[in-house]
Length: 367
Image 1 (cartoon, rainbow, N blue to C red):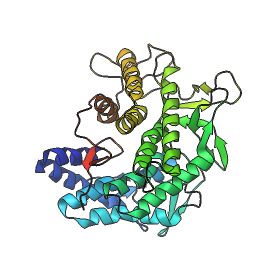
Image 2 (image 1 turned 60 degrees about the horizontal axis):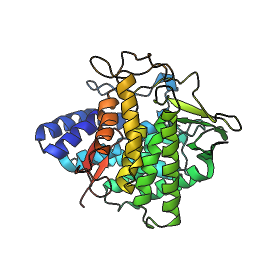
Image 3 (image 1 turned 45 degrees about the vertical axis):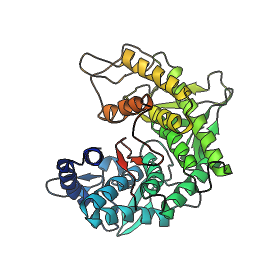
């Protein structure tokens, strides 16, 4: 979040103050890569340089952490001339490329046994702890001018696995959702976090080397639209018009989408409006602006407080706002909503810019 924000500020302003601060921060964070395998630890002391993984996750490496720094470090390397930033972060994807399973889908935890990484556990998720590494397979490729084939091939292989295994439909309403997989079994839930895939699949379709009219691109675009409609319904079907942390999907019941008791909160997450932004920008369909306006009105009505915006403890309890506002609300949720309603923006995610996972845009490399 911080490194990407500084780099985006520099990219737009060319004020070297932002680059100097990004270089200072990056030089401290990069020490997390000093491990036997080169996979970065999840936590680092910025003063001492000591790093470690988290005890709550049995000291495993988290997929979404190790694979969601490359857009930032590659840009920082080009801007500063310090190639080590790019080499160390790209090495992670070289490791992941060699480890990618036949179905393209990565378990969310990894071990590093004396420099030989391996998977720990078998949970597959496009929600928490897995999501953004898949996002960066595509975005690194876009950032590099669509010339580094390894990243695109990893993305396409993963998307084949997604369609073969994780894309599910509900009954009776036929809603498309992206399930988790635990020990080989499908878990019929979808995190709000996974709604980013609506935008990612659309971007993948519009940049597909085979062309937008290819069967693969049309498959991905169809799924992007279907997932985003489900994400919209996650909002529309609650009493506040705001989505919970995740939804459970039941087959054969009258209501095939249910708010679980363990996840009825909303912490101002951005992924659904992110998908609205990409699909509106790429397809031109105004329905995504309509849906975005509905979501924005609900946030204004139920989350706005005297001094900011608060999370909701229960999306079916309109009076449950709490004293908590995550930083990504302004960096992502409001930014994507603003850009959704700004047709004259210079931001062009198809040809000129790539958004990092925290919605900070930087220019695509020219060469």
